[in-house]
Amino acid sequence: MASDVKMSLANRPLVLWLLTAGGFFAFFTFGFIDNIKGPALPNLLQDLNFSYSQGGTILSGAYLGFVVATLLAGPLSDLMGNRAILCASGLFIALGLWGLGTVSTYALLFLSMLVVGLGAGAIEVGGNGLIVALHRQAQGRYLNLLATFHGIGSTLAPLYAAWILTAGGSWRQIFLYGAPLAVLLAVLFMLPMRGATEKGETHSFDWLVLRRTGFSSTMLLFYVGLAFYVATELGIAAWIVEYLIRQKGMVQTTASYYLAGFFAFVMVGRLVGSIFVERIGYLRSVLWAAVGALSCILVGLLSPPALAFFLPMSGFFCSIIFPTVTAAVSRRHTQNTGTILGLLFTAGGLGGTLGPAAIGVGSDAWGIQWGFALNALFCLIVIGAMGALHQLSSEQ
Image 1: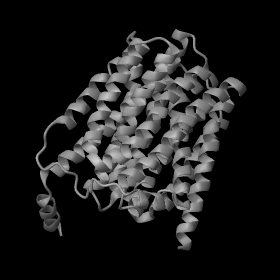
Image 2: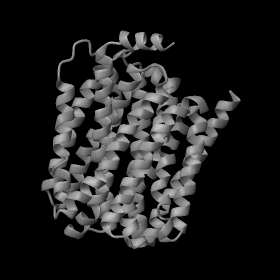
Image 3: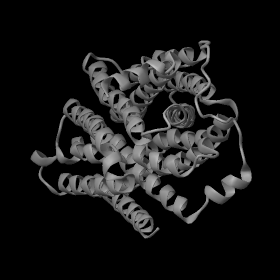
């Protein structure tokens, strides 16, 4: 058996593993860039004298860009291939980070965030599409591994931001110093690679198939579940630092470490999930993970500061939801996969737009305790959608 495995790996072209590594690097970049916003936010608000609502709206620019990118990148990935999408993503992110590091007006900061979001959405579609095309078997395992690299980048991001701030740097430097990583991503996928067509990719688009499969009642439940999951994850990521400072009395550096802990739990959870989701089943895994995440959020919200670590611990359960939902949808749809994933990620982007902005508005209206508590409501909706999908799957 061991020799058969070695022969199987030996017969795989080297380019498959190079592209897989490129996809992992893209998601590392995605996780890193996407999560330097939260640690930079308190200093940005103070420096420019913005309200919570304005801060939430600026953050929502990234997720609006994400929505636009996923709508466009899905069909484009079916027509042009995922490498072109990933190359463009690096260029967009680099441009947006340069803007965030140099402009000061509310409108231009929102626009710069939107450009970063365009790049992030392109990575979401291109990276997942690349791995789905390259690894037709055990997609849940490989997509969780892909998402693990997002977790690694996300874990390092707040540590990097805290290091810059502790060393006397500004929130602008947090953004500017991240731009070279995005440039490297673009260059990586510009390089010519012989035989680099993604396995299984058809480069075709069929509107009739898409209309029938992409807008079914089952897919609508997937869209709702993923949208409110992303609202939960990004709501926590964007506001946990400010919440811990204002509500739990932590200093900014410690609160940033808690954010790093959240993504460390996400990373570990995805490594564990890559082993078990194929055995447990995709929908059952997602349902129980959402229940675990809600439990941790509620304990962290309602307990004294000594138990605030339950908030980052929710990342362990959040971890597998996005990649496992992606795998469940990819398994059901083998035609127009890029476009359908684009619609799925668009729903996620809408959730990402809703989550941080709603928490900002809610915090202004009711206080940050109740604003941050919206994450629990978002997670409860995920449980409802995944429970309905699991029930429908059991009945079929």
